[in-house]
Image 1 (tube, one colour):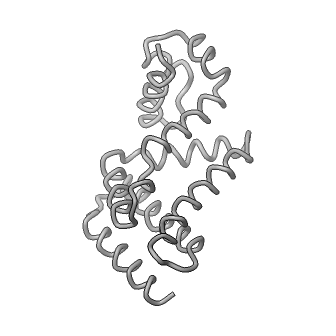
Image 2 (cartoon, rainbow, N blue to C red; image 1 turned 45 degrees about the vertical axis):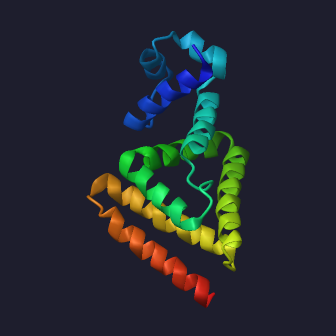
Length: 168
């Protein structure tokens, strides 16, 4: 079994239960726990690798422009409603065991978004990156508990950022 297949199995399990066990991941992958530990050494490393894999697989910020990235992120929230909860849970777990890793992930995310904003002529890109993530992460969390009209919020976020570009 390839490492990526194990990460896919872990992703499925963790999307259902962000506090999943290694046993549950092994069961989903159809392998023994020792196979999981062979590839990841411990649960902490499994969760770190899962964060990296999830970010790489689902990151909308490489789409080239802000509008496409926002649409892609909202589509991901809609298609994978547990994804935000998974990332928050893993970040919370890992912040206790490896705060440096979490800080690096946070910085990378902000830099990707800030770079995208800068390419499109925005100023105060780091602050706007935080604001954009706050909008999108807030919608992701609310969508877990209530129905969200994503097309409505897509328009509102895009309009807000168009205005911010002109005013800031």
